[in-house]
Image 1: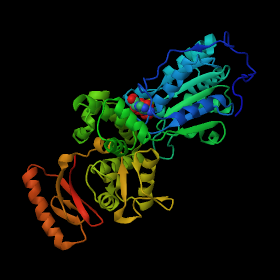
Image 2: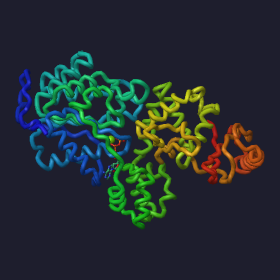
Image 3: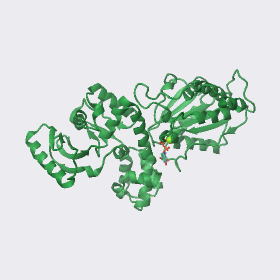
Image 4: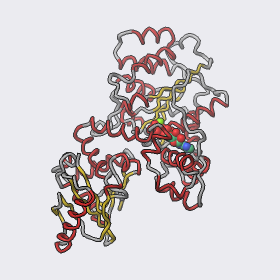
Length: 468
Ligand SMILES: Nc1ncnc2c1ncn2[C@@H]1O[C@H](COP(=O)(O)OP(=O)(O)OP(=O)(O)O)[C@@H](O)[C@H]1O
Ligand SMILES: [Mg+2]
């Protein structure tokens, strides 16, 4: 490990007035993190290491929404504050998070660039901030100011400034931030920490040198259990472990369920199946979890071709209350269901697989992996595509749509008509059964489809899909 940063890198430019040796901390703009952080010891050490190691200029903390990125960096900064900010000269943070989920147009980085130029660049920075210099040049200047001292610069929630999918995936849309980050990747005696739901493509060629990636994994089962207990949840050891595993160690969901169980059900973990994530989210977190989903939906819908396909897959997965059988998904994607599957029409298998793997890279779906290959189509009907419970909940699964559980064959029924099914004998029986069921349960429904889930001879679930 290099002795970072104990000797400040000499810059050819003179430091701006009052810079040397003096500690200046800008008021924090980060959202509050976890009240108490569980697990993450190794990750905190990784950030320590990045701060100490002179060869690391930028640290990118990446993980999907609600995994705990902000909580991690907030905790690390709090520890530095307790220690009196040893060897820090400038501390400045910014969160792009709220701006990304609003419908605000325009350039998200304006306000940040103005504030940062003033903070790091003193009078000169102030003048530049108010000038009509183009954004890229402002980003370049800001990088120059930042590297004049041993600074900690934290950019939280960068994803609204990035392309979400397609060939530009992860690239910054914002020229100022792109120039700033590449400038700092080239030279930085301090550290710039970025948190994002995506990797930062602009920094890809620095990744094995001055840019370090910290891919934040799910919370460990013991950490998840500790969090639930702290929130006041009680029950059997096995039930705790099952809950944490069921939500894939997703910090935000664990926090949400724990708080809701404590408030609405006296902490009894056994009541977990009664909890609707949507309702819990509104009551407990003011809608944070669903805003995460909303942001994904919005970004994907902005990227017409690739994004549209990915969004469509999420809607399809939202129909299932468990990992989706890949045979069933196959049948669905080939069926033209107006308002639902149009973006997938005529899609070649390789494009279908690319769509799934793009979603997997964002951490939105989980695919079966065999012999190093990942695909949902090539493994036949015993394979599955899984999605986080939040996705199923947000993108449409509604338990009221599950109208029947029976033993039958796989296929799709359109308005009572079978579109695809391997066993004819069963077809007419099921068709009559389903038509009768629709008449009884939802007599006014006109545009409806059934999807039958059939896995390896086990009982199937019948989903009723209504098309908007
Ligand atoms: N290690 C942890 N221990 C306890 N609680 C945690 C932990 N990590 C996250 N949480 C809880 O989960 C919530 C979501 O975490 P956080 O906001 O840090 O996620 P994020 O990855 O930054 O999400 P986003 O992508 O939406 O910005 C936090 O408010 C916190 O309550
Ligand atoms: Mg965050």
